[in-house]
Length: 163
Image (cartoon, rainbow, N blue to C red; front, side, top):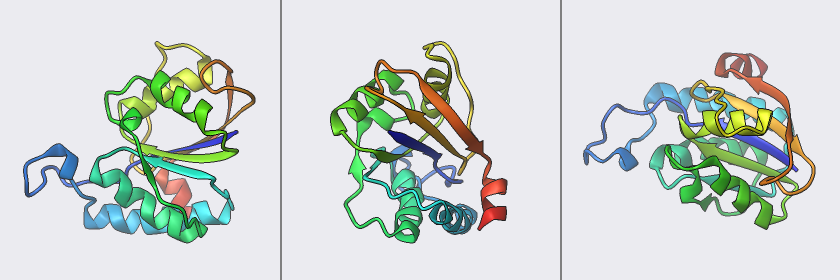
């Protein structure tokens, strides 16, 4: 299984409703994601599944990527990608999907802990991600028990240069 992990782009500090879940991408975040989406599409990832957290900013981050990649299925929301979720939850969910290629769009600190867990096999490791950064892991077998191989971790700036 190929797992792409994408951190949401820059979001507003507070939403008009005052709820964190409603925070939207800023103009700069939307612009950055258009460029990042072009770079991701050049990789021709052929996602089987795209999972996002229930927070607005992850859906807004994923939408330009799936459009650029020609992904036509619905985005799947999961609480397993919320900022303080346990990385083991999303790994268990991935194990049940049976997909070959997935895109996960989420938040810090969760994604940093997920990257650390995948790269080292340890629950106490963390690899922070920049906003709109993207990582790729390959894993053979059940993601909840198998060790993954980090293929690359790209900053948004490097992705923009590839657009």
